[in-house]
Length: 137
Image (cartoon, rainbow, N blue to C red; front, side, top):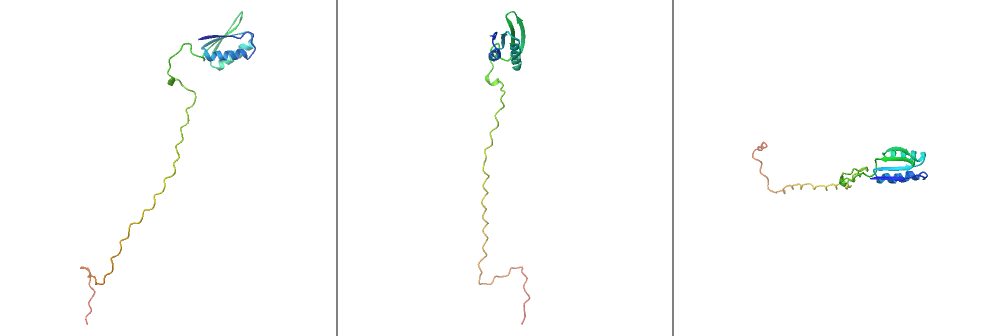
């Protein structure tokens, strides 16, 4: 879409402001001015926005044809997910903090076996045990 801005007779910054609005909405803008200061300021604005500028002097004014940046000349069907963004991705969410695990309670010692109860009867010697020398009267 082409757009024309007639800024003849307007003092700066009006030609720049009107051109800026037009650039945002059109792929090609023709700004008409009548003084060299407006030519320089509008040209500087357009180039700062990544646009090209062609200047042509005519009897009724100075025509600046600005191409680039603004809205595309013909609509395109681009899915919203395919449009690149200039914003950085959000930072990852922090890991939730967890309290340290509780220590395990100490395990009880296994029960100690109780010794057998004493008996009043003499215990037989084991079969392989050595016998003390017998005393003879």
